[in-house]
Length: 340
Ligand code: AVI
Image (cartoon, rainbow, N blue to C red):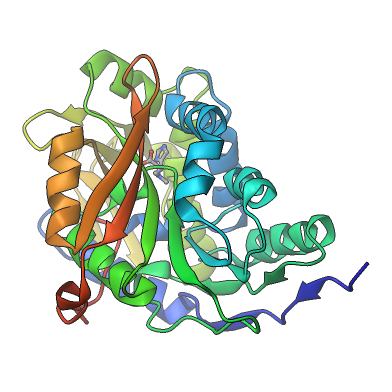
């Protein structure tokens, strides 16, 4: 058996302390205070997110897994042989294992994630389990990746994998710019396998983001703990509470951290004052109809090939293909970020 091929970690574009500091200061200085959701994912935040994925109320993970399992032959048939698979926001790469098992003679797998420890741990485990596969993990804010590494074996095509409905964490215009960038990376004949959370009853959505065990609340509050630890901020975590209403007009869950009392928070020699009831927006999670998302993808240079859904219409997995060479000239070099 060949030696596992695991390239040294490519570090360099991951968000730095300075990046967190400048974005936190900018976000908390706005009339509607914000903290970007990409800063949820330090080690503790990644652990809490994995816990969220196991919650009874949080249907997206298990529903998407089920859709992938039920349709694996058709999905991997559309991706085809000899592809270079690039995963944006790979986390623990749990869903990818299933794909890798069913994808014949791949040219390589590139997991990209903002959280280094989890990325390298899961890449090492995958390298043990798939010893003939070239795996090249990249620790980076996947919204800012400008170039992909080459594989030793020339790929027949590049297919991006963006599961988990993370596309919902982008504002729609940012989602278009981000997908356009993926189309550019994939090139002509490129494909995209993506998970999208669907619009549904408010009751189901709100309970998914306000779970009874309070894991989502801890996940949300952890961003303040991170600011305390990394930026020297003095957030009193007991003076903020989690709230996640569904904004039906905008079609999105909004994650808020609500100040329980009037207070002042200090860091970086600056003061940020809060009135009682004032809140920080930490995340948007947009929900889509299938035609709504297909229309957005079209504007990014992708056409819908096939979609699959669960029997309760909670979640969709879509396979899209790059529309044609003309759409590749439309790349947007602006920054792409999580919303909020
Ligand atoms: C990562 N992302 C798709 C999750 C979501 O559902 O928007 C993040 C999350 N926030 C709260 N719970 C889960």
